Amino acid sequence: MILASVRSTGTRFFTEIFRNAGIPCYKKEQITRQGTWLDKGLHVSHCEPMHMYHLITKVRDYPLFLPMRHPKRVAESWIKRGWAIDSMFFAEWYNLFWLHEKYDGHWLPIDTPDRDERLYEAGKIAGVELTTDWQPYEATETDFKPRGMTVDEAMKVLSVMPFNGSYYEL
Image (cartoon, rainbow, N blue to C red; front, side, top):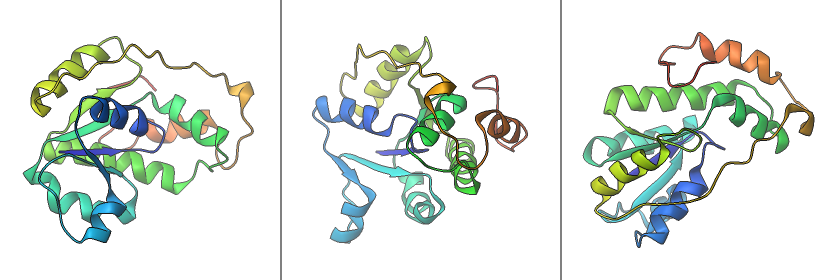
């Protein structure tokens, strides 16, 4: 199984849910060092351009899970971490939507009312029960010191990107 994500969409959150259900989890770097792909477990990678080859060479053979969080919350998180809202931010989103469209990935939203239903469906695919009672923290823009684009500018760019779909209103 593969979990491919944009940074700050819930990568660690969902990895821990799978791990707590007894599924071994491997970061992309661990697999590369071992030089082999393990058929068991969850392989975790971000949708950064440098990781896409690794993902697309394997994704057609395994279930694909895609953490999703409102892009505005993701942009706020990037800014809070000191990461610039720049071309990498948009490349990761583009790659995430491309993977979903091309390989029919399963969305795992962190901040929507249907999160638990989606976890249940993902658990059926993984063969385990996936649950959580965690509620996401709602930050405000005043918590951040922007670098690069502002959050509002980033939402305008994302709203016109191909593969945007209508998962969230931007």
